[in-house]
Image (cartoon, rainbow over all chains, first blue to last red; front, top):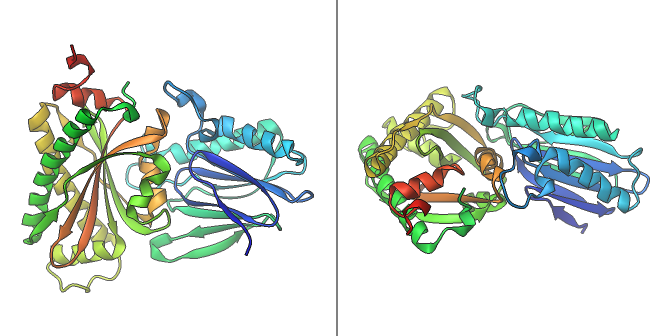
Length: 166
Length: 209
C-alpha cells in the first residue's frame, strides 16, 4: 500500500516516490503540482488567494498566497534535490463556484488566483505543462510521485469524473 | 479588527442568541412554506480552521447543494445554505407538493425552487436581525452550486482567509420531522462586521469601560 499524503488549504507537502499527494475539494483555490522526474520528487501547494498584500494584520502564512507560496514550494523542492530547470508544473482549480453573480470580486477570485500563479511561475522561469482550470465545478487532485501523473476528479451534477491531466 | 479566535465566551453567547432568534424566524417561514413541522437545533457558534469547515457536512468531497447570499449594509455577512443532494430533492418535492421521490434531477426549475426557499428563509432571518440591531441589511440574489462540499464552502469563505485561518460560523440545523431532511444554515459575518454587530448589541469593544 503506497503512502497517500493530503494537503489542506494554505499548506504544501513535498514527497519522494513512491506515494501520492492529494488535495480535496478545490473551488476557487488552486492546487499547484510540481514534479521533477529525474529525482522523482514532487510537491503540491494549495493556495487560496492571489497576493499576500491582501492580508490584514498578524502573522501571514506564505503558503496561503500565490505570490509567496509558489517560490516557497520551489525553494523547498530545490533544497531536497530537485532542479527548477527540470520541474514541471501542473495547475488545477480556480473555478467560479457560484455562477449567478459575475460582477463581485469574490467570484472573480478564481481567475485572479490563476493569473497570480502563472505570473509567479513565469517569474521563476518554470514551465506550466498542463492545466485544468476555470469553469464552475470543484476539483480534487492527486499527484503520483512515481510517474508525475496528475489525476483530476470532478463531481459535475453528481456524476463523478476521473481523468488524467496531460 | 476583532480576531475571531480572541472572542470571549460571553461574546460568543451573544452571537449564539442572534443565531437563535434569526433561525427561529427562518424555521417558521420554512414551516409555513412547506406546511410541515420543522425542528431546529440550538445554534452553534463555532470558530474553526477554514480547512475543517467542510467536515461539518461529511468531508470535502461530499456532493452537496449550496446556496450563497451576501448580506450588504451595516454588517456585511454571508449566508450559506447547504443540503445534501438527496435532501434537496425531497425539499423540492415538499415545496411543489409532489410525492416524495418524484424529483430525481436538479434542473433549472428545481434550482429556482431551492433558491426561493433560501431567499424566503434569509428574509425572515435578516428581519429578526434588523429588529434586534437596528441595522439596514439587504440580501443579494442567491447563487447556486451543486458540487463538492469543500469547493463550495472554501470559495464562499475565502475572504475570512484575508484576516486569519479561522472562520466564525453561526450554524443552525433544520430538520423536517418525518423525513429526516437536514439543512445547514450558516451565517458568516465578514471580518470587519463582527465589531459592528457586537457593538450594536452592547457587548463590543467600544461598550467596555
